[in-house]
Length: 382
Image 1: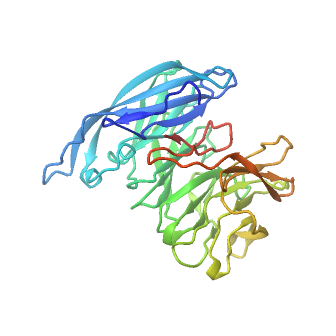
Image 2 (image 1 turned 180 degrees about the vertical axis):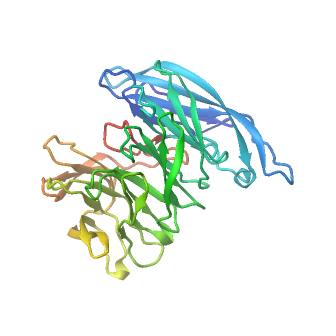
């Protein structure tokens, strides 16, 4: 991203700690970037017998506008002091900076026509909406309560109850291993209406899509470890969950399904699911690319395998029409980043590397891409 400094110094060490989100901030049709960092004094010790202590830190939000020539310029910087009570259980050996504050997704949360963003704090058991004042300056609009996991928390914005306001979808990581839907009252205040623990493992890779074609948005997610599998959160139209299908392989915890992607890959109007790292050779499920139909079964929706290609293995992500031929392609991490080119029927061919493989450092990560438009997308962590 030319023109955007990505190195972040936290506690005098150059390391991760910035969240990058993308959206059209100025209405010119080009996607801009929001960069969010935070800084504060050393975390306090919690005296014996106390269960929380007050703490304040500063969140800095920078807006980088797209100049239309693959470069971005800083147009606005705003700072907000955030005060919270650090919980004693969370303050023990915290994973900084993400445990203190992390921004997830950008969108117009309050319906006023500008772009706000969603963030949370594990240490403070809080979810935040940062409101845009219309000029690109951000401040806390609302704070809501939610216990989260030690690490691996993720968030999305989507209208889960059809009232025209973006709601929050929170995946809580280690120790919680749950998905929560928090409904927005229009002011950014979020109320937990439903939750689900799909597995005894942290969920991740969330995708918001109408899986069952009933007119509301559902969530597909994955989990690893002993609870590995591909899971669904089927929305009943209010943000609450009804029973959804799960694809769970058998075998030991070293096996994994990798990432999964959901979209209408064959153009029939239904949603299909693709995964390419489902591997458990000893239990009759060798790795390879599989496409599943989502069908009505005896006990509700089920995944039904339709095709299998053992020559393509990797972690799929970012469904979009990359070659402009009208169907949905994929990206896959397989000896570098490659494109899976769809022939229009849901059959894919593997391209040469788009981005060759490279070795990262402890605090350098490959950006995770959603759909190319990014405005409700995953963060970029550097």
